[in-house]
Image 1: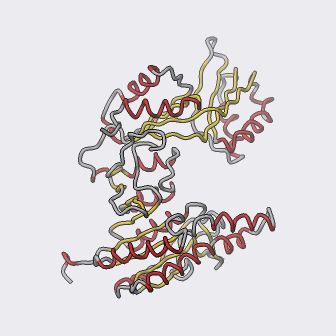
Image 2 (image 1 turned 90 degrees about the vertical axis):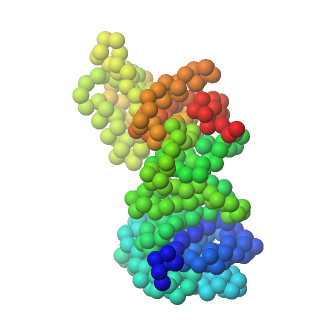
Image 3 (image 1 turned 60 degrees about the horizontal axis):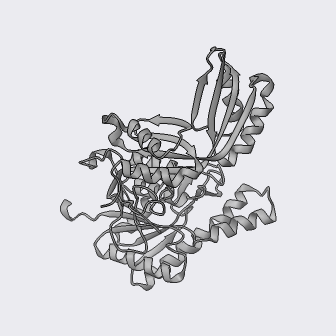
Length: 412
């Protein structure tokens, strides 16, 4: 076989809504069949049918709130096993040579952190031999095999990670993630009707958008794709049209200044008033929070006029809000702050774009657009390709729409 005719290797991942019914599984089988007929070697990664994992988790909790994590994994991994077998049957019925592979059969090796395991190695020799013979590999996502020889699961959304890891191990030309959306948009189309679908986005931008509330891809899968340079495509299971490619920055010839506006409602703000301004005070605040596994996001410090005290503001997730207050209040004697102000009615709005690296004035445009709408900025944080601000939650839609227009992202 000449190099020009060398078969392309593609990993196709289908989420829960894509395989939610027998009819949808049949439709997916036809899409896979087209890829095979195009002359490609194909591996398919499937999630559990929509709603199944939630039901399995609920049953575990109903039996025992403090259940054995190893048995929990044995239960919740079964959802993908069902879909995997059904998909193989559907492909066979469509005339395609296919077989199912469970995590332990490949094997996908992981650590022993049951419920949130991390992949350590994928042994693909057997699978590659089958692919070379023209057989489609149908792989159960979300699961692997721990060193204790027990089934492990990768945490919610882990099927995306399974697909990217498999694509990396197989040295696939592309990893297609099929979802209920048709790509990555400049912002949430439910808020901004003029949001545009992006043809391409960089790994770094996608990582920022995933971490800031965009639900298109799971964060770990993007991190893995960036590390192993796996070309990702996000596209719809329900529409037959191109999606968004997640690629290296070098693949995007003309990089936009700003690629998207993201927002996260999962923010809560805590302000400590008149904290003594002395060495070690920040460690005294954030050390106990870290020990309680509470992640702190945005931080701002204001020194008082006399210079002997400071106000310290920081944000945590809404889920950690009450615990964070309890931890801080338990350390009040040592921290010696005069008051604590807590506010969970806030939202983080972010402007993202690798084009920011080489352009000045991005932040000024953001602040001006928000000021013109009368939106007060409470906290600011920046990185090389992102500027985030904290504003009152009631201004979420107005802030996102204003910034989307200010950076010229509106569709014509």
